[in-house]
Length: 158
Image 1: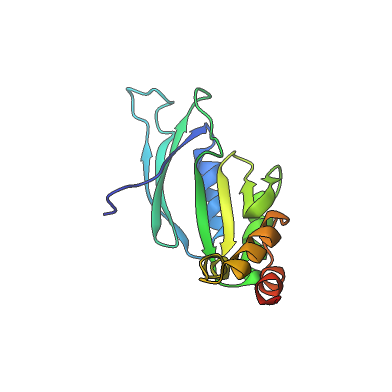
Image 2: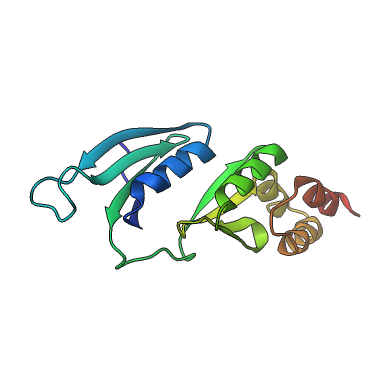
């Protein structure tokens, strides 16, 4: 069991959101569903929580009400190995009402914030050559969806 699990509050759409995430990520599965009982507060038999995993990271989605919403102050950082993976997750997670933002950030249609980031970016930004790292940072700041070829060009300029 994971020591810390992100617990996500959805306004009555936990099951819908989990199914959306399962369709976006290749290594994803439902681990457990708990249903409300007679004591409520939801209708007896309806979904209370769904424990699910995305690439081995466990989450719990709660079917609740409108009292709380998501904010970009907390986001899920997804390490991508290829441009194909960046493109696929970017398109799926921002679809049907999602919003894209700069530097690889997006908000899905449920309001959850994600950072879709090629792992090579972290290598480039961590380079000991500050000129290379600065060029990559400038290139990244001009992008919405991160582009490995553009980041690599900025890194290799010289």
